[in-house]
Image (cartoon, rainbow over the protein chains, first blue to last red):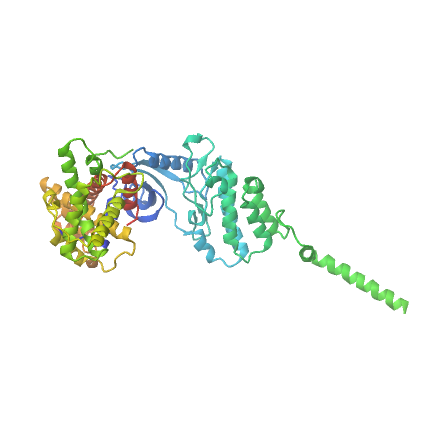
Length: 298
Length: 238
């Protein structure tokens, strides 16, 4: 037999992993790879549309990977929101690998998309859409637990998709079924310790994302919100995503977020900007009166 | 759904109470690992072809005599890492002792075609991974895939499915430099329809995958190790 070069082996690895559907879908490419699963681009032959199919790479002996994928599909099915990809179907390949089919979304990871947004208000508007999506999941009792820029896709129209719900935790899941997962750097300390987590674990990750999104030269008020969101102690963080959104709305409206201790000079400047016309009128009046008094006095 | 175990780990079988089982298992182990070890000795230890061939055979004899395989502890390392460290230890002792390598009895366990292995070394990409474990891993995967492709061909021929293998060969084993033919081109050259090419390719890939996973099970020390190796291999880790 001819020698297998490194390139030939790479092709064979791809060939061996390629999902072979007996009917229904024709796989055309790889969209991305995760910890234990790969997302493929495929053509739905019946409905003539492109879809994404997430397939477990290797079936494990105790079926944990398949169970995790099935749980992810169920969670996605519960979350009907424009920022969360809808799941169409799930099943098992002839070789035993579990998969689920979802809408194919095209976009760039958040960090790459944000690099093209120069203005802070544009970046904060993007962040607000992420907050809205995760808040919706929280309202359904689901914590994502692996929020990071790589798991957030930004479409061509600025549409935002929160992806990869494989580590998500539903409040209905028994403790022994909970999966220990997350990404260092974005994972809340209590999550790293393997403790039970709640919405505040996602708020920690969102605070870290906000820090990166706003940049090092961001206004101190925005960094204060990010710092509070990513506080080490859960009790020191915002309790709800709506609180984070409110704080950023205050900043957008020219008001100080509650997390920010505004210096006196900055407060004066802010008040001056906010009430510029009345302040100028009062100043003009005072100057006029003072001028008048001086003139009368002489 | 878990993948059904069809082959037992040869590592486990080398610990069998039955002498014949142990002998066959050891021969299978030699067959799976001699090529990566030979190439490793050539590239990492800079032995010449004759020295590397002698050292490979002598290492296996030494492993048999010292019961190295039975002493493997899955909790401490992957089997291939353990074996590579054994090779390093063996070769290091040989260098220290300044011994002249003797041609061992490994050849009686299984016929080792060092000429082919040497030919493969000359064809390999010029870049040698700096990491020794990576170097051994790549040669180990090459040997694994080599066996799986060979068995796939044999099976296809014995079942009268030569055309199916040819589709696989032309598409997945095509010379990367020459570019990959389209399904239509393969269909035209083999007198098949593109739909048949699609089906043949899917069937061969499924069988190839099953063979790779089977062979992998043979040459790993535990189910956990098999899972980790399979995940790396089939999850884009090559």
